[in-house]
Image (cartoon, rainbow over all chains, first blue to last red; front, side, top):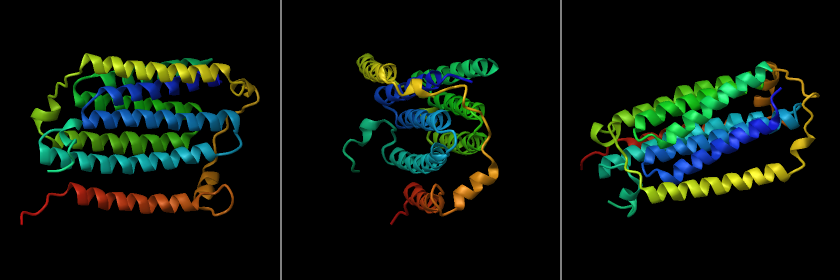
Length: 102
Length: 175
């Protein structure tokens, strides 16, 4: 049985690696990948709290399940927007869309 | 004991791939390292005996979202993305590191100070796999602690996102 502190430490470090990537990178797809890391860390936290503190219930598991579905939808729309931005500006850096108009 | 060893291997894979994924300059490699992170997280779910969740993680995240990234990267031109060498400014790296380390310090402080974590008794937890029948009944039941409403919501939501994605990404007709 893995101690709960290990799990929580892993997910906290993963979360802040994602935050670091989000602050550092200026490429739209790289920022989206960093967001995926953050989402995965949060999902892991839900599951760990469910398993270790309330093992008879399944709320954390179902929340993670729905969160995976929502993040799939979010990724699809975000990538569509990024492809559109690339088509219009021929660039995929965030500062290329700071005016938000063509 | 074996669980601890498996966990350590998975943790090294997850954290190493995550760091490489945010610092690598080539965007295709970042997507590949993201795939390793997702597989590692799925392995952790398997380790905690949430088999259904691990399977969902692999099929949706690793199978779906990563492929979406790869296709999106491939659809943009070679010059812009595939051979992309992004210029990282030193000041921005320092700022990001400060933000991340400060947040990590706060979280670590909370974890150390709280009494909540020590209330878990590892011996009393028995790892039993959640029966599939129970998951299915909870997903489509409408009683307390059953989830038919979010289930239906997410189906409509995915449909709306498909339509929205097609609307946004299609080429506009030249008028």
